Image (cartoon, rainbow over all chains, first blue to last red; front, top):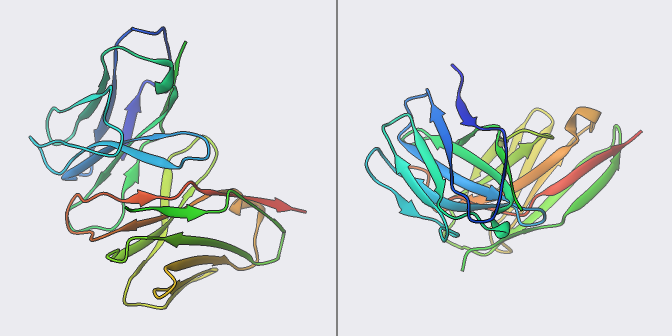
Length: 112
Length: 113
């Protein structure tokens, strides 16, 4: 099992450009999450998906959209990147009734 | 609102015990977690405690929960260089759904020789 995979690992965008961060899990988990991590602020939830076909806003959803393409994949889209979106983005997944969220290795995004 | 607070840094000597503290505000929190993040990696669950417990021990790790003061601590006995990481405290009202987990800002643990 690969666990949770994320692509790309690094990305530099110019202000106004768009991009999609990809996440996939092979653990048959129902729930998937997107977080951003900024220095001194811990992880903040952007969006989550309780199951295939559903998505919900988290703490900081503005400027982002998500798609739960199927049970395995949950993508995060920045339509018009801003410097404030410079961050490390983590995808995570969790099985039904489980305690542990499994995290991907992260995508480091810089918006100039 | 929900909030989880931790100090940002802790430095201990190799072989000593490390104690990382956390306070939370949501009295409905059912599960409290400690996650570890090594450099360049995602978070990994270290341990968790259910809110009706006071203490949980797992090898070198001891978790203490004071529900009255909403205070959680993680003690690492015989701290080793491999314990250098950022440790996140987190809370969740329940684990049976996709409900949110609220993370603290993380405590960076550094080990002195």
